[in-house]
Length: 207
Image (cartoon, rainbow, N blue to C red; front, top):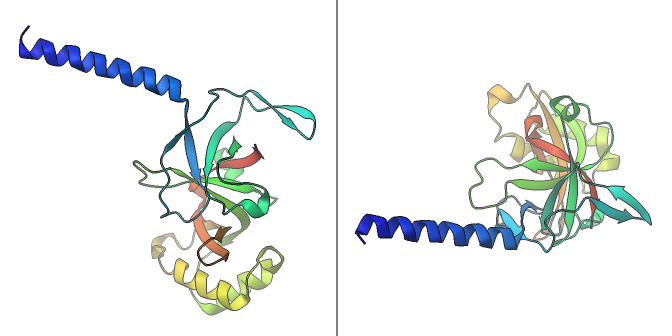
């Protein structure tokens, strides 16, 4: 047997082993519930590949049309979503992304994710537009949405001024999503700004 034939055979055997391993592992996409720079693997092995129905308050609910994600982190525990749970996400159309009229937990996409998770969980607070990194602008946002904000005005304004300053000036006239997450290191809620295009869907159920 020549070297090329040997390499081909070894490659085919390795590919077969990898395929078999993946089929057994039942890999599921991971969603970060915490800081975006906290490392979470892109996939997690779960015991069941397909779940088409779950029990919610004694009722059977069809979840076959939802995307299932594995939760890494506890930043959404305030909303009943904990690390190592699975969440079922209703995907949003482009139109739905711009027409949220409640306060759901959202799954958002993370850009440039390679080995890490490409999703994160955040609580929707409001839409904001015509971004300005001034104290006056964020004080107004706080005053308009204070029932949905869990930290002091001073902290909120300071955090958002710093984060909005990082957004490209050419994008600041666009509409954005303001979200909440719990920072386990700071032991308080923090607020972030996201492009609407990064919305993946709404978390409907967690088990």
